[in-house]
Amino acid sequence: MQAWLCAFGWVKYGSEEHIAMREQWQYEPTAGCALEPPEKQRCGPDEWHLIPAFKACAEQGTQSPIDLELANITAVPMEWQLPNPLRLTSGKCDKLEFELNEHTDEVMFDATCKDRFSVPFIASPSNATEKMFYLNQFHYHSPSEHTLDGKYFPMEVHHVHHAQDGQALVIAVLIAEGEPQNPEEEKRANFLTAVQSLMPHAFKLPEERLREGNVWTMLVEHSHALNAYTDFIDMSGGYFYYDGSFTTPPCTHGTHWIILRKPVKVPTLTISSYRAEINSNPYNQLTAHDNAFPFHADAGNVTWNKSLGDNIRATQPLQGVNNPRRQLYYSAPNANLQQDAGRPLWQTYWLPLAVCILVMLALAYFVWQKFDRKCYGKKGWESDTDEEDVDS
Image 1 (cartoon, rainbow, N blue to C red):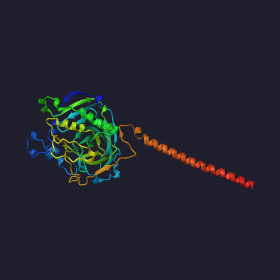
Image 2: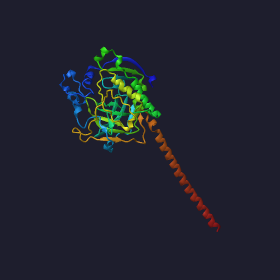
Image 3: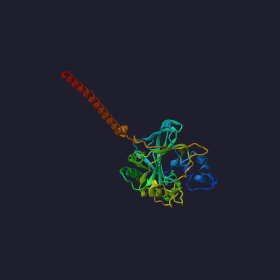
Image 4: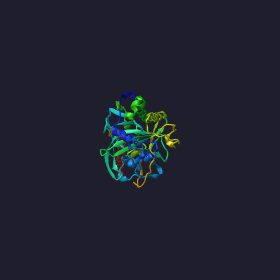
């Protein structure tokens, strides 16, 4: 895949407004950040809400991430009509922006490929009307921000979508550590590895320019070879759903969260390369944890370097004063459907349709044969009986 990608090295800095908002928060815990002058404020997770624009971060029952507690799953109401599977539609994208910043690295679609990748979804838990969400960017966290029964995965990918009215939808993919075992697993692992290989590196810029803007962006051409819908997202295990928020400031609530149940397996080197990349930024705003994370059994044999900084927000309560009735739902995989990841409908459904037609034809032939034999067999028997009666 990488052979088809051509990166060229113009590097730009984020806008002043973008940098100013991003430089107001960090993952390292703080105490008393609000007492600092506004130009020096850099608040940790427990104090994000002290920044006026980030007040939503203090809400209870609306925030993300959460623990995906299997014993606490609620059945999806029939009237919601959650798409099953998601109907992912992808277009052609010739250029993508790859960015390394203080908190993560990400791939951005908004400037070069806006509206090319989309998924329809319900407007809200109380409004089953569908509307279209468009892929805006995807980025990474390590370890995972969502936990499964209180246990982590070594990495999590967030595919951030926006509707025209600004509402967000995030498709999250949990990452497990290990060697892929089949072509499908290899395809998804290769996709993540290819993306990481194209990220810009902080050390490529002169030291004296680092303070001018702590973000590096590289434009990548021929990026149609990178398609997260067809080459990475796997809907075969179904998905969890809940109504949450951004996991970073401004912690916007009313965000749809779709977390795929089946993790993507990638080699140890891919995960360690990502962690080394975001830690290579000399002004990163990560935090290191002395205690080892408890990893889920499905996370694989995780090799974890505690000396490297992490970029996760702690899990938030499912319910609270701002939403005491929030629920976690699970949409089970539909065995009769396959994922439509940008393929025409006839390619998605031709096999089940062909099987149905063959079964119906076979059944019709069987019924016709049985009816034919019964009718003609009875007529012939009555004729023989009549002849015997005449002779006697």
